[in-house]
Length: 332
Image (tube, rainbow, N blue to C red):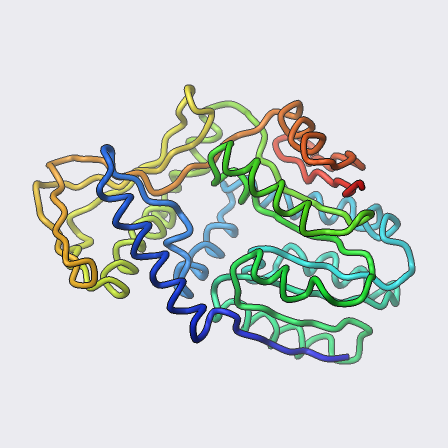
C-alpha cells in the first residue's frame, strides 16, 4: 500500500490562491461593516490552532463527532460493504476523528483508499506521515492532497469507479452563508457519481448559552485563533496590524441563527497594506466579523439534501442530539 503527498497549490495554483486571498481581503475591508471569511485564518499555524480548539472540553461540535464516530463506526462500515471503496475527506486537518473510522476499517481487513484534502500543506504532510508510521502493513492506501476542495476532487475524479464516501466534518458547512452552502452542496453532488455517499457534519440549533460557551473559552484559544488572521495578513499582504490593539468575542445572533465572531479595534488606527497599496482605517471599537457558524434544523438539512438530488440514508446523532452527521446517497 502507498502513502503519498501531492501539493496542488504550487506554481500557477499558488499565484491564483494568493490573488484570491488579496482580493478577498480588499473586498472584506472595503465593506461596511468590515467582514473577512474564516478560511483566511487557515495557514499551517491556523490549522494547528484549530486542532487545539477541537480538543477543548467545551467545544461540543468536535466532542459530539468523536462520540458519533465511536458509536456508529460499524454502521458506516456496513454501509460501505466489503468491496473496495475510497474515503475522501474535505478539510481533513489532523484527521483525528476520521482515524476512528480508518482503524475500524483496517481491523475488519477492508481494502480502501483514503484521500485527505486540505488547504494547509503542513497539515496534510503531517497526516500522511503519521498514517504511514502507524498503518504501513494495512490494506489502506493514502493520497494526501494540499488543495482547494474541488481542485482536489477534480484531481481524483477520473480514477476508477469504486464507490466514494466524501466526509465534510466539523460543522464546516456552518461557516458558509446559506446561499453559499447551497452552491457548495450542489457542486459537490455534481462532482460525484450515482451511488456515492456524502457525510456532512451539522451543528444543530440549541440553547444560546451553550453556543456562547463553546465559542468563548476561558483559555482564550478562540481569541488567539481569530486574531491569527491579522498575522496572516501581515505576512501575505505586508500589512502592519499590531495584534495587541485588537480583541475578539463570539456571540449568537438570533436573526441569522449563527454564532458570529468579531475582532474589535480597541482604538482608532490606520493599517497599511504594501501588496494592496491601500490603507484602511479602523474606528475605536469598530467590529470586523471573522467567523460565521450557522446552526441548522433537521428540516433544513433534509431540504438541502433533497434539493441537490440526494437521498437521506441516515442521521447519526450524539446522545444529546446537539449534532448530526447526516449521510446522503447521490442519486441520478
